[in-house]
Image 1: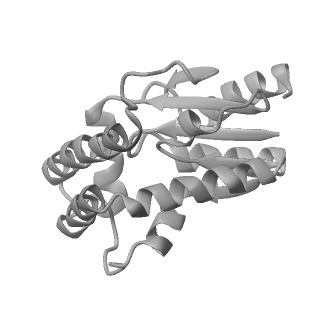
Image 2: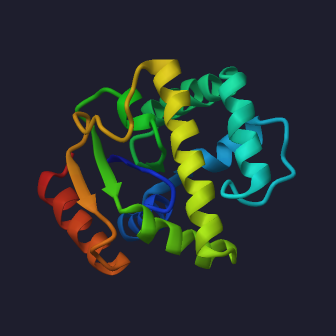
Image 3: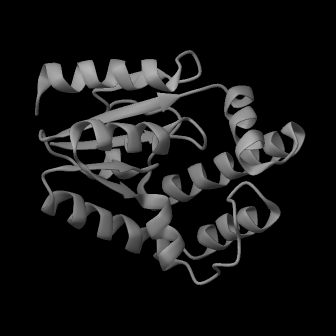
Amino acid sequence: MRIIISGLTASGKSTLAIGLSHELELEYFSASSKLRDILPPKDFQFWESKKGIDIVKFRLKNPKYDKRLDDYIIKYVKAHDDIILDSWVASWKVNDEKTIKIYLKADLETRASRVANRDKISLTDAVKFMKEKDKLTSLIYYKLYGIEIQKDMAPFDLVLNSGRLSIDSLKDVCLSYILSIGK
C-alpha cells in the first residue's frame, strides 16, 4: 500500500503520516528531511525562520534541488509498495492507481498557531514566515511543473480540513478510508 499525504506547512502531514505508518506498519518517508540532505545550506533549524525563508528563496533561484528531490521521490515511491510519504508535491507527480493520495487543509491561523508552538516563536512571526514560505514554495512548484498546489485538488482521493479535527480523529478518518478502499 502506498500513501502520500500532501498539504501546506503545519497542515498535519508529518504527524498524520507518522501515525498512519505505525498503525499500518508502513515505512515512513519525509520529503522535507530528504530535501534538507540535498540542499547545500544546512545551518537552519526551521523552515519558518529568516534562514528558512532564505533557503526557500535559494531553491526558487536553483530549482535543480527540487527537481532532483522530486525525481528521487518518484523513483523511490514506485520501487516500494509499503510506504507512506509526506510531501508538498509528490501527489501530482506519482500517477498510478496504487497510490492513495490525501490532502490536508487548515486555515493560516491554525497552521501558524501550530508552528508558533512547535518552533517557540510568536504567532505574528509564524504568520509572517508562513505566508512568505507558502507563496514562495507554491511559486517553485508552479514554475517547475505548472502545479497550483493550493488550488488543484484533482489528484486527491481524500481532502480533509485538519484544522477541525484532532490528530486522533484525523487518523481515524484516514484509516477508515484507507482500509475501505484497500489499494
